[in-house]
Image 1: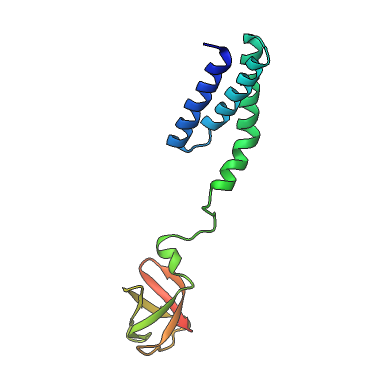
Image 2 (image 1 turned 180 degrees about the vertical axis):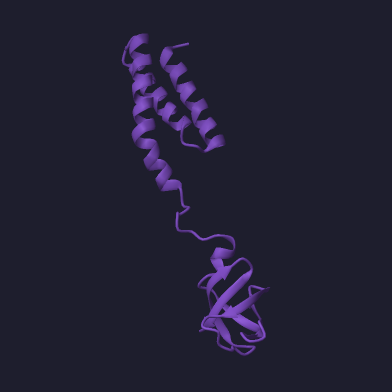
Length: 144
């Protein structure tokens, strides 16, 4: 089997491995294998093929991989998850929020949360409020 075919088969195997792992590491080596295959096709010797493989793989891993990872990584550092995601959401008061009696509940997406009002004001049942903070399982809300 010709050397360039071996390099191209290696590249295909690495692309399949990349699809299975999605870490964008194997694709760098696949690019290096393609470059070595082209080198073999152009008549480069085995030492040249290995050198090209190492250099191209290294360069793509250092320079191309971070760009690819950043492009495909849709998660943002500012993305709020779980209970943090409630801040800024609109809720409906399901039980009057009374700061004196320490009672009050709000409903968001079918979930019922204990709530207190920002500024310690009374908020009647049925009013729409906005969640401004969360402390453990207690939401702090203000009138919308």
